[in-house]
Image (cartoon, rainbow, N blue to C red; front, side, top):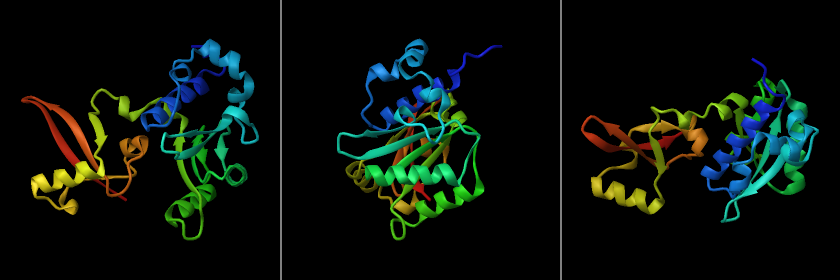
Length: 214
């Protein structure tokens, strides 16, 4: 089976925009619905190459209505190591945007992983950077789209308070879901949030609730 050059990165780009839109970042419907032909015509080799030295749509930012902004880095290199990681940090310093999402082709080297984990676990005490990392396959094969995965919704702080009060529950007594769960990662769930899961059983629809933990 022959696959058109650029088809994989096209799928990554489309699903990435869809995920960002679901996270409430401002993404136009035109971009989400872009065809492969139009994608190739607009971006040419820029996204097909996707090296850490590329610019334009291989590194771009998106924002929410509240002003929260995230930098996106797409790399088609086999391994993302220290060198591209430094390029990403330089770009973050240049833009003043210190939250980033890295989408990589195959692997992140152990040393780069160590630096990323160190940045994320320091809670701003020794570093200002925060990174999320997804492989191409994680973006293409979205866990949230699987037919057996129910809808997950984050409760607002007010909804969380009202839910706990109505059930006479303490937060720590809820069943748990970790921030490392594929659904949590996709939806950007954070520690101490309460998630409503809408399931369908033999007796009809019902809801379950989970506390997000590290």
